Image (cartoon, rainbow, N blue to C red; front, side, top):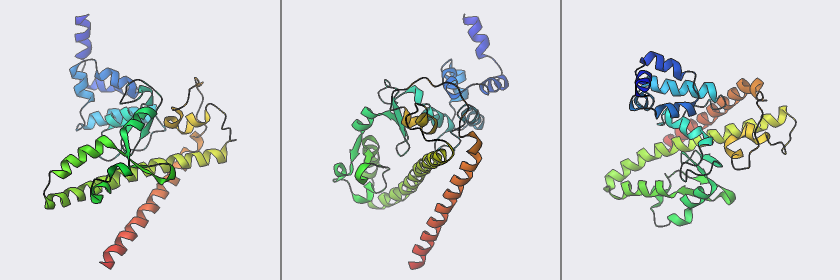
Length: 267
């Protein structure tokens, strides 16, 4: 057994990369746990080859997830976040979970409820600090924050001098804008897919496959029925969807640039 294991782990890097090209992300995670050598190949966020392995696996086996990862997130972490069948990242028990892009976390309803805090719970924090913390906006426009992220960020903020706080806030504002923009793009993408789906296909909300085809992360909140293999109904319109979403993103970016220009001109 040891000899066989040694032969497997001593395969050339080129052959290892070729093998990985046939594996879905969930199998890449399994492969990364075989030995330190394989983990080194597959868990190197600064390696171009590693990132390409994960990216190609995602695009080949998760074709609906063709958006690039959020800024600063590696392809490996991105794939891990997208694999909803691995279940909640917090309790590790339930598989009925959802991805919250504002917090870059995948969790179940119970863990989500336990980990968030409303705006009313942050009254003791400076407004300039709260304003740059990622949040979700839910019913009645209430804002909710990930408590651990708030506590961790405030520990950094509170230990800085006045001048350092200004620099820290400016940097965090850029990160905040990037996170919230990505979350908005995700939401817009799902809404557009739903709109076009309703236009091109008979609407059957009672079908067990309706939401699973459009919103797999949302559908995970409900009891699942095994879905027969079938071609995606959205495939013929994929390019059209992508062009529309890209045009919408460019339009929003243009509006933001004009607003920034007007603000700078007024100053």
